[in-house]
Length: 251
Image (cartoon, rainbow, N blue to C red; front, side, top):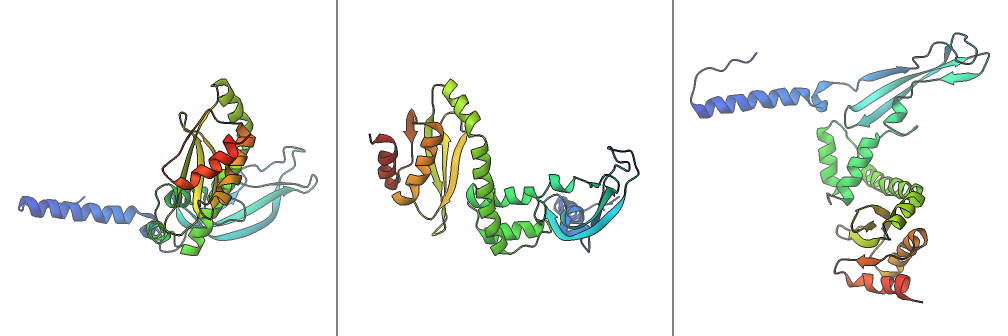
């Protein structure tokens, strides 16, 4: 337990602050482990649920340099069990709940990078610095790849929900389309279409620019999936006008 001698108020507060900083540093992922820890993963099942035979080890593997925000960088030692008579394999599924098979990054890192790039408009260098504080060292190039992957996954999630969203909006009397594009400098745009009242994301895509030829396919996809909107809300960018007229006002 820390003990602080009597001193002026300023010195006492300064000493307390330094002590708190040391504690925080000791608890951060970057200072907990000198080397990446190894997590051993094996199925909790020891008996085959088909025939009741005892499971044996089929193989083991070591996945290196995996990383999540909660842990930082770690290794995973994976043991696969199997039932020889049935040919059924068993493994611990906890790793697949936090990251894709054969990928190094956790889902939380993927979301962190995507939100940083496209929601908070943070550049890749700043994201790299912040991840370093969490004991995650990845290159700016890898951060860029994660940003692209984030957009793809987000788009696939929207497509999977199209039927349910269409039914929901039909019961509500239609939808008001709100268009928004985020961009930093000369980098590609993340174009997003959301419902103006319920704030449900209908579609998003990464496009090279806000030129009409890039926006029209995006709008056509929304129209095909959800029908004509009851109204449209957009920002002051004039490049939206021609695509909107082409997709929603022509007969």
